[in-house]
Image (cartoon, rainbow, N blue to C red; front, top):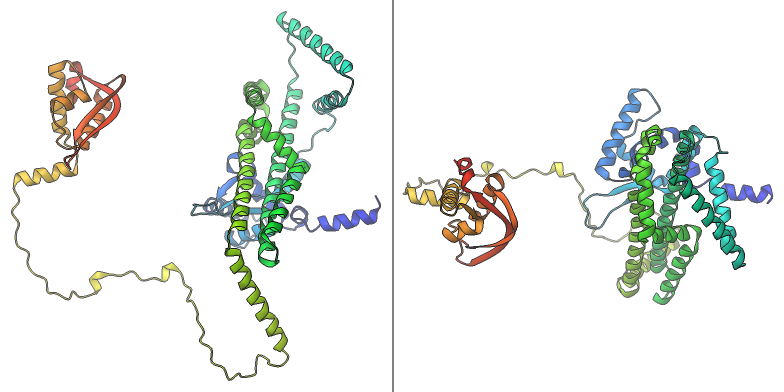
Length: 489
């Protein structure tokens, strides 16, 4: 390939978010901040907007205190700018009151490039050579049409495994050197991080496809069948791409019980190995959440695929897009007419035309004045209220209706346990009525957790509610024993 064609490709890449971030004067600060907030902790890859703003404020304040960089803008300004530049992805989940943020694929690539430059390791390692040899052997076996040669290689592998088992059973176990184990662990982290980034690219391509199809449906006069055909062609294109195949292979492996069990077992052994303590905290955290991180990324892609399919179905079946297309046509026609008369009627020229304009006043919630009833005089004069008659019975009834009568319940428990020796909640309700309805049952369960003993199985309790209807419930069986009655006093 000539330099001319390469330059043309590189000029296109120069406009990408990854290259722009690496070449920016603010790049070191932006990459460091994004890495600290989103990248280093696998559990914080997706965060609510309020959490991101709080963390960004702390990072900016710390850098300003040390005199690093020109960081005079507000956290919200930086957040909006990074979304517009393509470093962050902002979403509004259905049903959520707050937006969510995560790193874009170009931002993750930039972080990996800079981190790799900072933490360069020797490339010619035993682990990489072993991976290459294993990949070559697998490719050779899978592409060999001679069944006899493939069977012979499998027999050789079986014999080698047999010799290895015999050697281990004789107590001749050989451990890998600590530095070799560390290098292999870091290779696993590098490969798995690249895999999750592939998932992010697939997700971004699905989002771009969804937006492009909506635009075509509103702008171009195409039939619903043409739009649907283009959608399915785009989906097949993504599924057949390198990113799509990578995602399909991973998701199939993740859903395979045998493969998942092997991965979980191997990961558990790695976390318990001696060399694990020599990894830095970020690498340790990534390996600890390795399984869940891969599952989370794959679920995000699956949800995006489902959302695209649902949006396609709504676009194709709905008639609302026709009204939007009609309004867009009216706006386009008005713009064309305005461009046609701009040379005849200029802005300073007065027109013999009266227009009734409408406007909406915008303001902050803090400008709203709360209504204060004390500032408004009452229309009726105040009168002295007559003194009411309150007896002890009505007062006691009001109290019993507002809170559980635990003193009475303790007496009922003590009497029932004294009669039966060991009394359950069902036994107590069988001897004494639930005068407070459900409140009596709740109070007995509370006392049982504090002063009772857990029994076997469950039991049915019944009571008559304050509305007069009979009700039952299944609860855990608890027993009050006569030996613990002193705790109720």
